[in-house]
Image (cartoon, rainbow, N blue to C red):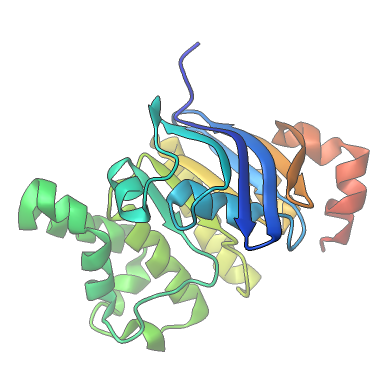
Length: 243
């Protein structure tokens, strides 16, 4: 059996005296679509931030494609093939849509030059035609759904091996999500590994192959997504709250 693309073992994240996640162990295989579900404050976002190098883990190990990467900064993790789409979108509001994409593709420009960067930008416009229509518009003036499209596209501009998405559905209308989730599924079918953190368990379990359940900073359950969807404890805790 080949080694996983991402392997996280006994990861703990602290903010001062507050322990946000503890002893978290997760894996994502090459080309897998994996979910992390749980209520607000369960430690999901902190786990992703630690993997992405945004926060420094207090303990534990992270390997990417077999290489130890725990403690690497976020710019280094991008070079290791990891891209994070953060919760809350965080576009560069005073920059145009196109400038946001260029900023996301700086590594691509270094490695392949302007032509490669332009090719990838056109690929993003094919994925999200709305962004092409808005290419010269300031990112801060986009709708919430358009901003979510932009941050996903910006993450993809680095040509990651693993795309991590934190709360893709947050604050978005169901109609927008019906556009976004099929795009993510298509990207996964093309071979991109995706790690999706999501509060709306029904949506996460519907598109992922495996998932982890987090509570109070720890992983409490894991397994095939369809199996978790039928689990009475998961149904009661998460799925029963969904509409």
